[in-house]
Image 1 (cartoon, rainbow, N blue to C red):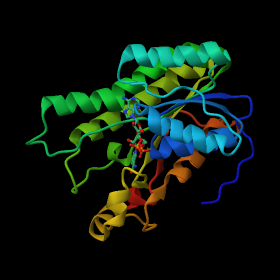
Image 2: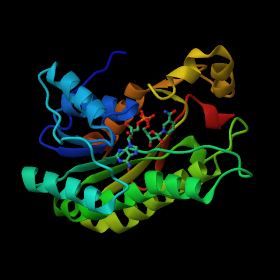
Image 3: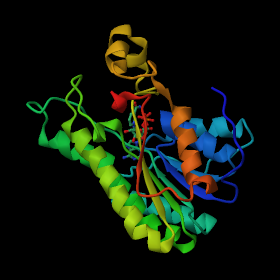
Length: 257
Ligand SMILES: NC(=O)c1ccc[n+]([C@@H]2O[C@H](COP(=O)([O-])OP(=O)(O)OC[C@H]3O[C@@H](n4cnc5c(N)ncnc54)[C@H](O)[C@@H]3O)[C@@H](O)[C@H]2O)c1
């Protein structure tokens, strides 16, 4: 996939979570190509470090050592504060990381519920809470990755906890925009539909699952991580300074049908 970059994030410090995963890796690459100083982390240090290698191959840098469990408040706080200490500012907080569990209500355990809330919602609160004061210093941008699961149900699999968590990400972000506006913070959620990543590759390759997942998707293909990262880069840039408090859906037209 080709991408056009205009170094729109020059001079900005961007904290991106989940930089070992599909969309987080694409975002780290895109934001660094746009000129940002990128600090990442992931539960899985190896995949985060692989992203660092990909950036280094382009002469770019990815800061942060990886191996951070953002569902642990102390680790989340330390990751944010270490970055603020090292770079003396935070301009962009991009909450991308998440881990979920799917399953029908009849079988979904309390442990499953708490796992999803911890790894899809708590971690967004933790990083935001500790980055807030730095973002407020010069006016920053918060980008929270939600999902179309916040907006529509699915007959394919049970996902009540995931839908609840992502719905909460959208409404949490809206309120961040309200409280952030007086101090120059913009807050935007992005709701991707079905995106091709290493995690969804097996579904994409299986013709039967692929067809089910693409039902109702007007563009008749999964999205690419780079397409989500391109939207996020625009949202974080000086070209989007009048956008806040909204959710931007990137779903190939799924919600239109
Ligand atoms: N792929 C899709 O179809 C799709 C659709 C809608 C929304 N999303 C959302 O997009 C975002 C990115 O997902 P992805 O598709 O790139 O998936 P992914 O699994 O490839 O990436 C998520 C990354 O987050 C990391 N992570 C999970 N829990 C963590 C924790 N507690 N601490 C630190 N890191 C943690 C994982 O290790 C992983 O590398 C997620 O918020 C996901 O819910 C994805």
